[in-house]
Image (cartoon, rainbow, N blue to C red; front, side, top):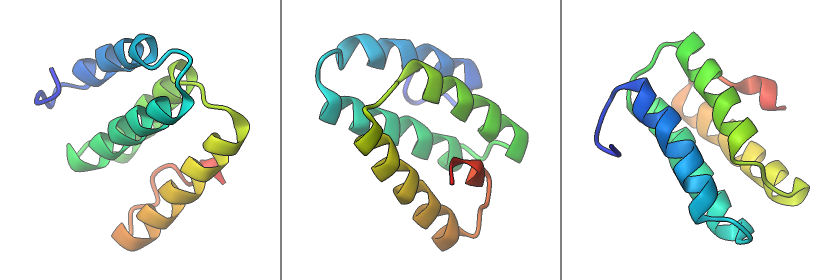
Amino acid sequence: MEESINPFATVTLAPIQTKQTQHRPDARYQAKRRLIRRLYEQGYDRQQVIDLFRFIDWVLHLPKALAEQLGMEIIAFEKNQKMPYISSIE
């Protein structure tokens, strides 16, 4: 499933990662980071990235400090890639 470019694969992976990282915030951070990065790498259009990000963000909830850290990382990544897809995270 991790190799599939089908957006439903990403949707399916999010709850799986949620269960696998339960009570392990650092592992959940890494899992969420991988799934979000996957959105960019798979070449989805802007709206698909936004929609899938919202779902991932809802399912893979992080403690506030880690959520802020991930948000800063995403913003930096977007600036480097010139891909302002989910800048609403600011």
